[in-house]
Length: 286
Image (cartoon, rainbow, N blue to C red; front, top):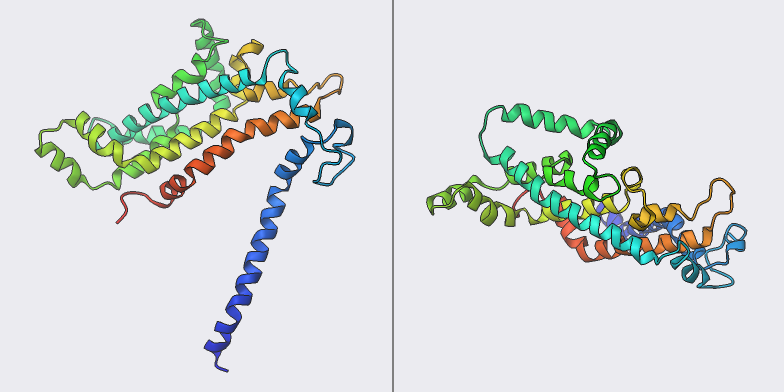
C-alpha cells in the first residue's frame, strides 16, 4: 500500500479522534453551566452535597420562590436591564458609526492624532475614569438614574467599537463614495445610504457585544443605582447572597441566574450567522 493510500485510509480515524477530543473539551467547558442549570432544579439542602447533574429530587420551588423573593417580581429587574441595554445599543450604533466614518473617510485637522488618542483610551481601565464621572453626574443630579449608564454611549466612548468600524469602513471601496457624490449626494447622504447599510455585519457585532457587556455589567450599575426598584438583573442577583450571616439563598440564586441567561442564549441563536459573518469578514464579500 502506498503512502498516499495509507494516509487516505487513516483519514476517517483521525477525524473521529479529532471530534472526540473536541467533544470532550466542549463537555469540560460547559460543565459549570450544566451544573448551574441542574442545581436550579434541586432542593437547596442537596445542591452542594449531590455533585451529579441529574436533579434528584426534581423541584421548581427555587423558580417559584425566587421570582418574588426580593419583594417585587424579578421581571422588573429584567425589564430595567432590557431598557438600559436597548438605549446603550442605540447609542453605540449611532455615535460609534459616525465617529468611525469621520476617521475612515473625512479629512480634518489632527485626524491622525485624534485617532491615536482614541486608540490609547482602549487601554484605559474603566475604574480609572469612574471617580471623575461619578462626581460629574452627582453634581448634575443624575445619580440613581440610568443617565450615567446610557448617556456616554451617545458620545462614542467605546473606542473598541470605533476602531472595529473604522477598519470595516476602510475596506469598503471608495468608488462607491465617488459614485454617490457624482449623483449629488453630500457626506451625510453618502453615510446613511451607502456606508451605513454596508456596515451591517460590523453593526451586528457592536449590538451583540454592547448587549452582553451591558447586561452583565455589575460594577457600573452598582455605583450609580441605589434604589432596589431601579436595580438591574445583575444587581438583583447579588441580593440573594448574604455575606454577613452566611444564609444565602443559593437555590433561588441559581434559578434566577438561569433566567438571566435566557436572553443571552436567544441572542446568540438568532444572530449566530450574522456574528460569524461579521467576525470572518473585514469588508465586502467578493
